[in-house]
Amino acid sequence: MSGPFGAFRQFVLKVHSRCDLACDHCYVYEHADQSWRGRPRVMSDETVTWASLRIAEHVKTHGLPQVTVVLHGGEPLLAGPERLGRIAGELRAALDPICDLDLRLHTNGVRLDDRFLDVFAEHGVKVGVSLDGDRAANDLHRRFADGRSSFEQAIRA
Ligand code: SF4
Image (cartoon, rainbow, N blue to C red; front, top):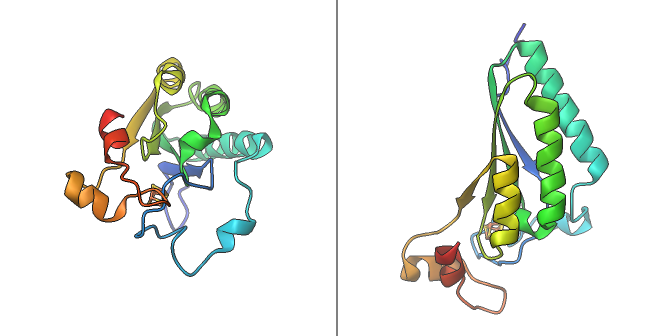
């Protein structure tokens, strides 16, 4: 039974709700709705557990062979490698036995380093890095709060 809207096959988990960039086009942090200021910075362990269980329940209910889960933010790397490892591990434990889990993370790349990459390799997390274009295009909007460019970090990532 799929219900009137069918089954969800992609889930975006906002695991960290702040960012280390201040892109002027950011639809979350740089516009009129500033309600994010009153929300938790990081997704709690309890919420991760419930999200994993509820996605698993959805997969079973709809008999889905495959789902995609994207770890997102804000900037998800601000959650740190240990927490991201716990999150990925919990999702894998809940979903690997019942479906093909396509697990991804989307980042601005500024903090991406070997500590994170080791965790992502261990848990099979694919990584996407945002870049607005070449240096000129990227520097139009994708900057730190003090105006510095993020281009070099994104290219390195
Ligand atoms: S990197 Fe993304 S979340 Fe962060 S300020 Fe830029 S658009 Fe917003």
